[in-house]
Length: 89
Image (cartoon, rainbow, N blue to C red):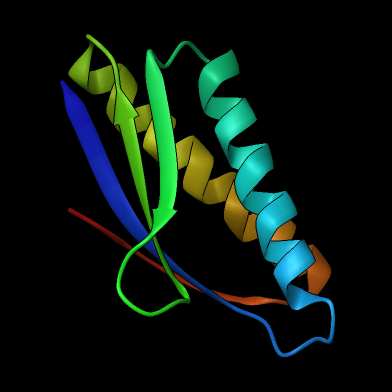
């Protein structure tokens, strides 16, 4: 089973790309650590839209995992002063 979400991350800082990349890599690490079989985060359309695909066997666990990933991104982005918006498919 696969669950997906779309996150929009915008930074106006000079080194914003680095911040966005670091946060998304951290999110991937969390998902893998929490037992996801597969995790992909990639751009869709023009940046700053990123799709998060998480594959696993338990739908409830996947829902929680996506929430955890979104919460991590939200927390880290706020610390770094970057704007974000999340929608789930």
